[in-house]
Image 1 (tube, rainbow, N blue to C red):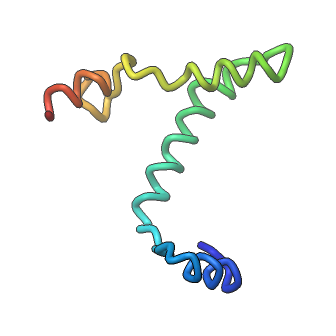
Image 2: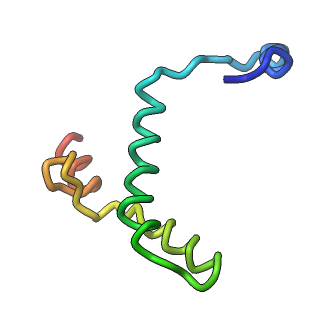
Length: 81
């Protein structure tokens, strides 16, 4: 959510100031919980760069997800299209 001043400035630029749905936040929270539980809490890295690389590799579109019925995001999207 944006503060009143930011909201005014965005409206002056004709930019829509929408409010997100609570469900959007829960999806993000779930994603970060997964990163922490499956990656961060189980590993240690010598450098920040190594940790960042591991985080960016964490979301692999070919990795299977239980919430997608054991399919990868790529396979799930292909089937849904």
